[in-house]
Length: 413
Image 1 (spheres, rainbow, N blue to C red):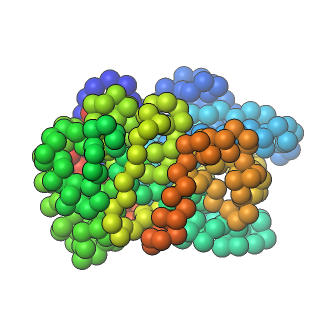
Image 2: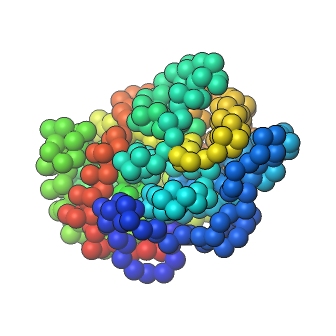
């Protein structure tokens, strides 16, 4: 979620450090959320045995676009167990300090977090999350390896047991471009650099700590450039950091969210941006980006996958945790998880075995038919897929990027 108003974003390292002492500002509540931001949420106190609970859910990854219909269906099917769900959204870098402050003040207002690897990693570093996966496997009577698709299960390993994968996609890195401005798109990092040099200000990617495509572009470069160790941003990315410093000379600024890059591509302000499969399909379906926009694949590239996680903060009372475990099992049903095809936002989207496009709602199937790209399935099959960085190295990569590459060129929207 982007923040309105221009300005400079505090580097991630400062945000994480601040979490140890103070609370970050809360984001405005979304429609349907009760009470002012930062106040004690309705139903946040302990639930009595047998009493229908109110769940307070915060999304820092855009995951509700994929899963809110699944959650709402669970609530409709279990009115005796769930009285209400309050939905909220916040920028990912603010989450850790927000949860830390609630836990430190013995005033936990959040029962469920929906997050990508970024806030998941920051929370693992600060010991904020319940070790959910073992509890869930015991409850389900099976293993996540049996439930999840193989690449989604590879993403599950990154959670270290502190979250459970609910949606997945191979991500990128891809280049999305306006064919009226780009006649011959680059297919190597070197060609991209030459193009950016010849067209200053026309290429853009968002701050990696706030953006899936920005994060994927960052993590895909070590494979493309032949860096020493793609999993060690501190000691193994010499070529990547040098490349990004040079590329940055031709980038006007870095927005705090992917949506702004799409808006500027659609307006013609930028001719080419970093993208992913879902960020290619969904904004074209929504009309933010013209349907005619195209994608370019790097030669011999490696997919860096991405996922969203179901995460429970430490301190959630037992009655709510019991409901949350059953909600997670509900989301993992193939017929429910197939709703993650959505409008192509996280294409493909489903994380569990057996969740086929034919199970998705008809409007989702129609969107994928019209705005999807048939070549994606083949390119996914033809190129290796790797997991992104783990918790500690991902936080370190964000810190280095903020310090060396774009920390003084970030604008909030």
